[in-house]
Length: 408
Ligand code: GDP
Ligand code: IMO
Ligand code: MG
Image 1 (cartoon, rainbow, N blue to C red):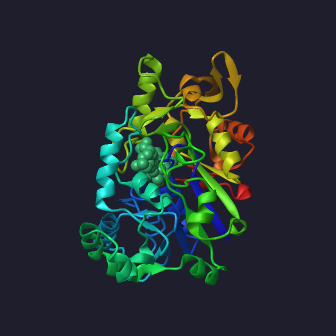
Image 2 (cartoon, helix red, strand yellow; image 1 turned 120 degrees about the vertical axis):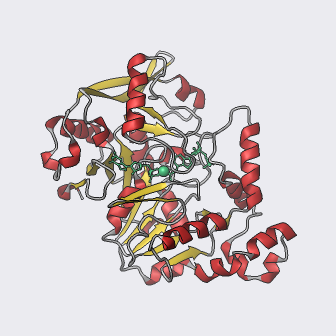
Image 3 (tube, protein in one colour; image 1 turned 135 degrees about the horizontal axis):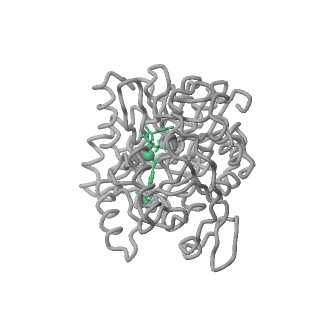
């Protein structure tokens, strides 16, 4: 069984928690896109881990983890992360593999990324990890791949500075390098999870371009970046929050307006209750109502089979909640997600009201025991998106996860 897990919003939906949860029943976890711009949080007992490059199944000592061809890998960040995990008792020795087709992030790309974004008239607000520069070197066919590091003749083509940086990591990287396509075809009978980074709305082609990342964070990226054909993928899961967040700049139609007293305090409440601060940069995340127009677009464009709803507990104390069911743009209503940045920036959300449940969900152990108001909210989302919600997360801990067996 090959299962893809992607973010269905603007990233930070809780992919790390969900991949860690699902990894229990998988043998191999393949991260298929992005780089150290990602920050995936896993809470295991009293321990919390923030993973940037390592797939989120890594905490289980018996799982194989693979960094796929669609990734851009900063060697220093990678080995710092591996060393951090080793120090915390999690050894990746012999079970971490890296695609020989993955691209390498050089220190100078990181500098260019920061300088270029700061010089933009309208900065994107990148994470400053060299991601866009590495992907553009790749598409310009000037990139450096993991496979190159094993060949002195390839290293000799580089400048002295690039070569001396890479020579520090070449041996360690080459020791983990594999042909992922060949490896996965040998393990075709295993349960394999393909872990996405970022989210559908940050995808370079399908997201809110140019306010997007530069990798293929859509489900299609699991095939390309995971080195398997598109027909090999059995199930696509889309993770989304009960509300919306976004880090960095770009249009966000349902963002809480700071000038509106109710929305301003709702924003503060959600940011603090949901701990909405970036894992990679520490930036406070922008917060807003759940955007069902955007979520349905993500379902359609990624063929999402099942949705996974996270952070439902953050709404526990509210007497009412709202979600956006259409946009009003220049007097016209639409339920389709526009490509145009000005259209998205002028979109006013049409909001539907729901009763809150005012009960702590963290103590709930079965989906059917969720309060009726929470079940009604979920049923509305399923109907609107024409996609079942198969897992509901009601806290950051592993066990705060309600699986609907009948929808799996
Ligand atoms: P990712 O990038 O999609 O892996 O998400 P992040 O790790 O960047 O951000 C998600 C944050 O929410 C992390 O701090 C998680 O520990 C936390 N989290 C995940 N699921 C839930 C949930 O259901 N409820 C609450 N309250 N927190 C959650
Ligand atoms: P995870 O995997 C949220 C955002 C940045 C910026 C834009 C481009 O944790 O969900 P980049 O450095 O990629 O060129 O930045 O994309 N961004 C993310 N936002 N979660 C992420 O990853 C993100 N990765 C990039 O904030 O707006
Ligand atoms: Mg994150």
